[in-house]
Image 1: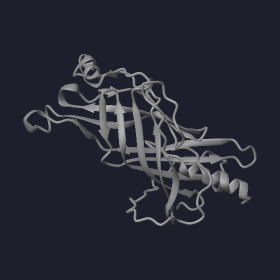
Image 2: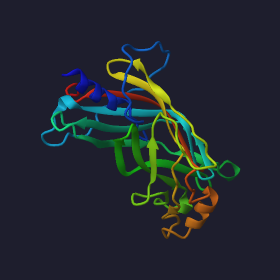
Image 3: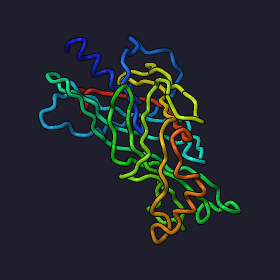
Image 4: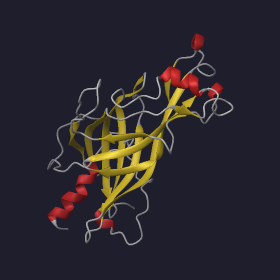
Length: 258
């Protein structure tokens, strides 16, 4: 493989997907690290398009292990893993690139404790979900999300954002350019912390995105939208929301996958 093509293929490994963006210039050897790495499951890697060359495609498994999300007036520390599996590749003749979605997995987290310690009826949970859009462009990973708000009185279809009006994140390591009152923030360049597969450690950020209002809330799919929007301060304009994802990203070329 020509060095320039190899570098372009490797560049895609530094992107997130719940959880990054295209970042080249990987270190030549693993950096000293005491990190305890998560297990990386490549079973959700998507099938390549017909005719695609597996030598020029790689599957990325990005595990967000920490960080914060601020959506409107809700601010939550990420305490359980969010895993995005996706593929980046390109045609070695035309150099046309593509991104394929594999899977998005996230546990729910507690937003509001229940009254008198009740964890079921009065507690409110939120669970990030994929909202039908992922691509790598301009050194960032663009990822569409929605958040399922869970409580027995809200029903099962209450979400902040939707597939048609998602929370559109543009995650990268470079300095952001948000409208006020947010100020620029910056992620961290990827550091090699593991081999076989290669594992990168990085922080990706975005604080220039908007958050739409909630929908489908209540047992009649809408009557309680106002309550969720009032509680969460939604819709929330760009400049009032933040995503900071601390990640490990592992990757393999398709020639190395089973």
